[in-house]
Image 1 (cartoon, rainbow, N blue to C red):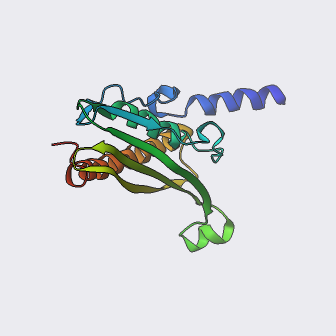
Image 2 (cartoon, rainbow, N blue to C red; image 1 turned 120 degrees about the horizontal axis):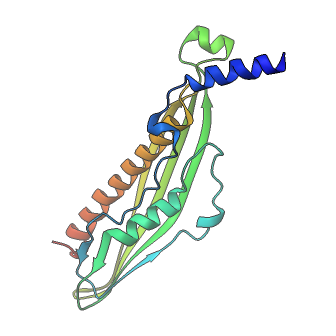
Length: 188
Protein backbone atom coordinates (compact mmCIF):
# COMPACT_ATOMS: atom_id res chain seq x y z
CA UNK A 1 0.00 0.00 0.00
CA UNK A 2 2.84 2.40 0.85
CA UNK A 3 4.50 1.75 -2.50
CA UNK A 4 1.25 2.48 -4.34
CA UNK A 5 0.80 5.76 -2.44
CA UNK A 6 4.39 6.75 -3.21
CA UNK A 7 3.96 6.05 -6.94
CA UNK A 8 0.68 8.00 -7.09
CA UNK A 9 2.26 10.93 -5.18
CA UNK A 10 5.21 11.06 -7.57
CA UNK A 11 2.88 11.03 -10.58
CA UNK A 12 0.86 13.95 -9.20
CA UNK A 13 3.90 15.97 -8.18
CA UNK A 14 5.57 15.56 -11.56
CA UNK A 15 2.46 17.02 -13.21
CA UNK A 16 2.79 20.30 -11.31
CA UNK A 17 4.04 23.31 -13.21
CA UNK A 18 6.22 25.96 -11.65
CA UNK A 19 7.71 29.27 -12.63
CA UNK A 20 11.43 29.37 -13.33
CA UNK A 21 11.57 25.55 -13.72
CA UNK A 22 11.36 25.14 -9.94
CA UNK A 23 14.67 26.90 -9.39
CA UNK A 24 14.86 29.56 -6.68
CA UNK A 25 14.72 33.15 -7.82
CA UNK A 26 18.02 34.84 -8.47
CA UNK A 27 19.37 37.08 -5.73
CA UNK A 28 18.57 40.67 -6.60
CA UNK A 29 21.62 42.87 -6.72
CA UNK A 30 21.99 46.48 -7.68
CA UNK A 31 25.34 46.13 -9.42
CA UNK A 32 23.65 46.87 -12.75
CA UNK A 33 22.31 50.21 -11.49
CA UNK A 34 24.20 53.21 -12.76
CA UNK A 35 25.54 55.20 -9.82
CA UNK A 36 24.02 58.64 -9.48
CA UNK A 37 26.63 61.39 -8.92
CA UNK A 38 26.27 63.22 -5.61
CA UNK A 39 28.20 66.47 -5.34
CA UNK A 40 29.89 65.74 -2.02
CA UNK A 41 33.47 64.73 -1.21
CA UNK A 42 32.36 61.49 0.44
CA UNK A 43 29.33 59.23 0.68
CA UNK A 44 28.61 56.84 3.53
CA UNK A 45 25.92 54.22 3.98
CA UNK A 46 25.17 53.29 7.58
CA UNK A 47 23.43 49.89 7.66
CA UNK A 48 20.52 49.06 9.94
CA UNK A 49 22.02 48.34 13.38
CA UNK A 50 20.43 44.88 13.71
CA UNK A 51 20.42 43.92 10.04
CA UNK A 52 21.65 40.38 10.72
CA UNK A 53 19.29 39.72 13.61
CA UNK A 54 16.13 41.23 12.11
CA UNK A 55 13.28 38.82 12.82
CA UNK A 56 11.37 38.13 9.61
CA UNK A 57 8.25 36.05 9.07
CA UNK A 58 9.25 32.50 8.17
CA UNK A 59 7.64 32.79 4.73
CA UNK A 60 9.31 36.09 3.78
CA UNK A 61 11.97 35.70 1.11
CA UNK A 62 14.48 38.51 1.67
CA UNK A 63 15.78 40.78 4.40
CA UNK A 64 14.68 44.35 3.50
CA UNK A 65 17.54 45.80 5.58
CA UNK A 66 20.16 44.05 3.44
CA UNK A 67 18.18 44.77 0.28
CA UNK A 68 18.08 48.52 1.11
CA UNK A 69 21.75 48.63 2.12
CA UNK A 70 22.78 47.01 -1.19
CA UNK A 71 20.64 49.50 -3.10
CA UNK A 72 22.07 52.53 -1.26
CA UNK A 73 25.64 51.29 -1.64
CA UNK A 74 25.33 50.94 -5.41
CA UNK A 75 22.99 53.86 -6.21
CA UNK A 76 25.01 56.95 -5.26
CA UNK A 77 28.62 57.98 -5.79
CA UNK A 78 30.50 60.96 -4.34
CA UNK A 79 31.95 63.19 -7.08
CA UNK A 80 32.30 66.54 -5.30
CA UNK A 81 35.09 68.25 -3.44
CA UNK A 82 33.42 69.37 -0.20
CA UNK A 83 31.25 67.89 2.52
CA UNK A 84 29.78 64.50 3.18
CA UNK A 85 26.50 62.80 2.33
CA UNK A 86 25.36 60.06 4.72
CA UNK A 87 22.39 57.70 4.32
CA UNK A 88 21.42 55.79 7.47
CA UNK A 89 18.89 52.98 7.54
CA UNK A 90 17.01 53.90 10.72
CA UNK A 91 14.36 51.21 10.92
CA UNK A 92 13.10 48.16 9.07
CA UNK A 93 9.86 46.32 9.82
CA UNK A 94 8.18 43.32 8.27
CA UNK A 95 4.85 42.34 9.78
CA UNK A 96 2.83 39.30 8.78
CA UNK A 97 -0.89 38.90 9.21
CA UNK A 98 -3.13 36.03 8.15
CA UNK A 99 -6.34 37.28 6.49
CA UNK A 100 -9.44 35.16 6.16
CA UNK A 101 -11.11 34.74 2.81
CA UNK A 102 -13.02 37.66 1.32
CA UNK A 103 -15.54 35.08 0.15
CA UNK A 104 -18.15 34.39 2.88
CA UNK A 105 -18.23 30.65 2.24
CA UNK A 106 -14.44 30.42 2.15
CA UNK A 107 -14.23 32.41 5.36
CA UNK A 108 -16.67 30.12 7.16
CA UNK A 109 -14.86 26.92 6.21
CA UNK A 110 -11.40 28.46 6.65
CA UNK A 111 -10.06 28.30 3.08
CA UNK A 112 -8.95 30.79 0.42
CA UNK A 113 -7.10 32.93 2.92
CA UNK A 114 -4.38 35.46 2.22
CA UNK A 115 -1.06 36.34 3.78
CA UNK A 116 -0.57 40.08 4.25
CA UNK A 117 2.98 41.37 4.63
CA UNK A 118 3.57 44.98 5.67
CA UNK A 119 7.09 46.17 4.89
CA UNK A 120 8.45 49.52 6.07
CA UNK A 121 11.92 51.03 5.67
CA UNK A 122 13.01 54.38 7.09
CA UNK A 123 16.16 56.12 5.81
CA UNK A 124 17.62 59.33 7.17
CA UNK A 125 19.85 61.46 4.98
CA UNK A 126 22.40 64.01 6.14
CA UNK A 127 24.52 66.46 4.25
CA UNK A 128 27.42 67.68 6.38
CA UNK A 129 29.90 70.52 5.82
CA UNK A 130 28.45 71.69 2.55
CA UNK A 131 28.84 75.22 1.17
CA UNK A 132 25.95 77.33 2.45
CA UNK A 133 25.08 75.09 5.43
CA UNK A 134 26.91 73.03 8.03
CA UNK A 135 24.31 70.30 8.43
CA UNK A 136 21.03 69.44 6.78
CA UNK A 137 18.93 66.35 7.31
CA UNK A 138 15.75 64.65 6.19
CA UNK A 139 14.06 61.33 6.84
CA UNK A 140 11.93 59.33 4.43
CA UNK A 141 9.77 56.27 4.99
CA UNK A 142 8.73 53.80 2.31
CA UNK A 143 5.91 51.30 2.89
CA UNK A 144 4.48 48.45 0.87
CA UNK A 145 1.79 45.86 1.52
CA UNK A 146 1.89 42.50 -0.17
CA UNK A 147 -1.12 40.18 -0.33
CA UNK A 148 -0.41 36.59 -1.28
CA UNK A 149 -3.01 33.86 -1.72
CA UNK A 150 -2.48 30.70 0.27
CA UNK A 151 -2.81 28.75 -2.98
CA UNK A 152 0.18 30.19 -4.85
CA UNK A 153 3.39 28.21 -5.22
CA UNK A 154 6.47 29.04 -3.20
CA UNK A 155 8.16 30.41 -6.31
CA UNK A 156 5.17 32.67 -7.06
CA UNK A 157 5.12 33.84 -3.40
CA UNK A 158 8.81 34.74 -3.62
CA UNK A 159 8.28 36.50 -6.96
CA UNK A 160 5.47 38.66 -5.52
CA UNK A 161 7.55 39.55 -2.48
CA UNK A 162 10.58 40.47 -4.60
CA UNK A 163 8.42 42.63 -6.87
CA UNK A 164 7.13 44.47 -3.80
CA UNK A 165 10.65 44.99 -2.44
CA UNK A 166 11.73 46.28 -5.85
CA UNK A 167 8.80 48.74 -5.83
CA UNK A 168 9.71 49.79 -2.27
CA UNK A 169 13.26 50.59 -3.39
CA UNK A 170 11.85 52.52 -6.36
CA UNK A 171 9.78 54.58 -3.91
CA UNK A 172 12.92 55.30 -1.85
CA UNK A 173 14.84 56.22 -4.99
CA UNK A 174 12.29 58.77 -6.17
CA UNK A 175 11.96 60.37 -2.73
CA UNK A 176 15.71 60.49 -2.12
CA UNK A 177 16.52 62.05 -5.50
CA UNK A 178 13.84 64.69 -4.93
CA UNK A 179 15.33 65.65 -1.56
CA UNK A 180 18.91 65.52 -2.86
CA UNK A 181 17.97 67.84 -5.71
CA UNK A 182 15.48 70.27 -4.14
CA UNK A 183 16.61 70.47 -0.51
CA UNK A 184 20.25 69.42 -0.33
CA UNK A 185 21.23 70.65 -3.83
CA UNK A 186 23.62 67.70 -4.19
CA UNK A 187 22.40 66.43 -7.57
CA UNK A 188 21.36 68.14 -10.76
